[in-house]
Every structure is written in C-alpha cells, then in structure tokens.
Length: 161
Image 1 (cartoon, helix red, strand yellow):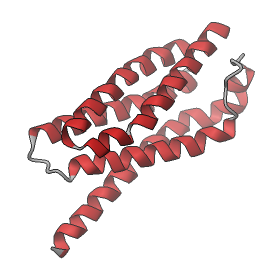
Image 2: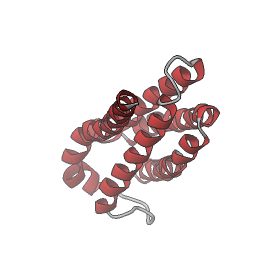
Image 3: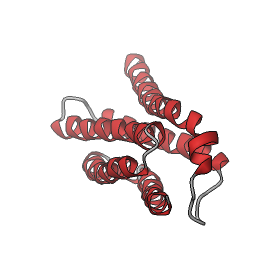
Image 4: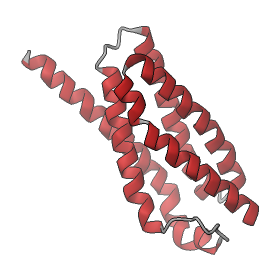
C-alpha cells in the first residue's frame, strides 16, 4: 500500500514537473522578445496585460499536469491510456514550439500555423482523456479556452502587422 502511494506521488510530480518544464522552455523564446519585438507590434484591443500571461500559463500547466496524472494512474498497460498520453505529449511539444515560432522566429504566421495544429491536438487530447477519466478531460477545458483566445490574438496580431 505504501509503495503504491509513493508511486502515485512520484507520477503526479513527474506530470506536474513535465508540464511546467514545457512552459519554462517556451519562456526561453518568449521572454527576450517581450520588451523588444513584441512591444513594437500593433496589438488588438483585447490583448491582456503582459503580467497576466505568466500566472495564466502556470495555472494551465498545473491543470494539465493533474489531468495527465489522472490518466496515467489508470494504468500504463491500458491501450487507451497509452494513446491518451501519447497525444498529450505531442500537444505539449506543440505548445512549446508555438513560443519558438511566434516569439523566437518573430513570426505571427508561423505561430498561427502551430497554434492551429495545437488546437486540434488539444481537442484530440480532451477526447482521449474523457475516455479514460472525465475529470481529466474537464481539467483541460480552461486550456482549450485559453488557447482558443490565444489563437484569436495571434490571428489579430498577424492581420495588424
């Protein structure tokens, strides 16, 4: 019983750490561009203040980590768990790549291509998570909504610039 509990805690920590790490890696491309390239862009009226992005993403990565844990704890031997987590990892990589496309390459166009693919992968992740754990699927809803908003923002920046 104690070993199972420790394994569960370790899996939760791995999921939380992995998701937060994706955010940290993405910030390597984002942070240098904020005061320079991004500051000079024309932005739509609905652009949130810069200070909002870090707490929003930290919270979203936390929810994503918990969702991944809820799926993983159902057992890695189940094919639907393997599929769900595989899709999750792909979307997490795309999530990180968006920062490099948009901020690193300073390209709203490349960013839009990546974020459009990311939206599709988030929906696929949610569907696969719901098949394993309804709670895990619902935990990704704020992420889907935020990335939908980010897609609108990315699109507007592309049009305005």
